[in-house]
Structures are given as structure tokens and as C-alpha cells.
Length: 271
Image (tube, rainbow, N blue to C red; front, side):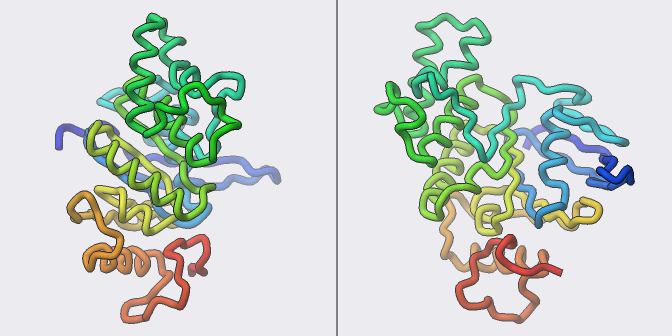
């Protein structure tokens, strides 16, 4: 790994709630993410995952501490850091190709060049044959792939992803996880990925940052030393998934998984 692409130094974020009181959304968070690394932020609702992602994106500023990207303090959004959210945010009046071209168009890339680039990334996500379609003609999973192609087309160094597959059905989510793992390997992007899903984090990440709430903080960082491409049913995968669940307090050491366990802490009770 090369030098850190993202460095978070003792970042805290305090908000004033509706009653006028102060609430700590994040407290004393420090984290380094290397260039080309895939890091998942994992934890229950309210643990500050999205708040931390927004600090890296430049949508928000820390109350104390700082966030640096390639050595420069983050003070505002920047096109070198592209965000992908659970909502696809596609332009309904534009074709699939037009949506992928949009960021290049804003940058003034000539039409023929941006069209070639857009086609390249539609091929990458398996949607080139849908270039002339409009978003309403696509499934949710296909729309998310368009959003991913649009983000990649401008060649950002860093991808910031906030539960991008959370609204999809289980099979579509797994297919997109496969696509994401393949693209991350091919394109060597630095990726910070927010998720509630334990299995998703084990499948995608180089490291899993387990966060705890009240206030949001890093509880533990778990390296994922499984070879790629990963098999969701391998012994190593199952063992690491169990370790992450134990870290979240969903399953205790030696306790069997409950019947129908989903590996998703949103559907389990946590302490």
C-alpha cells in the first residue's frame, strides 16, 4: 500500500438538537485509509457512519479534529471524491448514456470523448445495451449500476458510498456486491463504504471499521485477509463473519447462530 489517501485525526462532531441541547454524533475518531484500500464502516444506526462519511466528502466539518485527503485538509466537496448514495439521483429526462456523460459534460470534455468514456463505463457495469434507455425503464439494481458508472466516469481517486445497495432485494444486492468487488480490483480506487450488513462488509472490505454509538466512535478495526474473489460459504468467510457479529454483540462466543439469521445487525437486537 502507498501513503494514506485519507487521514482522520481525532475528529468529533457535535450537533445542537431541536430542544437546544448538544449531542455528540462522533467523538475522537482517528483512522488512516491507504490509497487503493477498500474500507467498510460497519455498525448500528446512530453510530456516526454517515456523519463520518460526510466529513470526508466535505459536506460537513468536524467540531474538532480534522480530515485530510492526500495531505490536504478537507473544507468542501471536491470532484476527486465522488459520492454514491442509496437513492440513485439519476436525471429522469436524460438517457442512461446521458446520465453517465453528465459529470464529463460539466467539466467541458468534448462530446465525442465523453461519449467514448461513458460507453466504456457502461460496458464495465454491463449496461452498454441499455445506453438509450431512461431511468424509469430500469430496475433498481440497474439504476444503481448507472450511478456507479457515472461516478467512475470522471475518474475520481476516492469513492464514498453510503449504503448504496441497502434498498435492493437480497439477490440483486449480492450481484452488485460481486460487481463492486470486481470493479474495485480492476480500477484500484480508494473506497470508503458505509453499511449495516455484516456479510457485505466481509465480502467487500480490506478492513472493517466496527463503530459503536453514543457517541459514535471506532470500537475495533478488523483486517480481512481473505483472498479475492471471495466465496461467501468458505470456512474463512464464515469464521470472520462470526467474529464481526461477536464484535457487534449480536452473537456471543460459543453461541450458535439463531435460525434464519440474516447477518444484518438492523434485524438483530444489539446491547
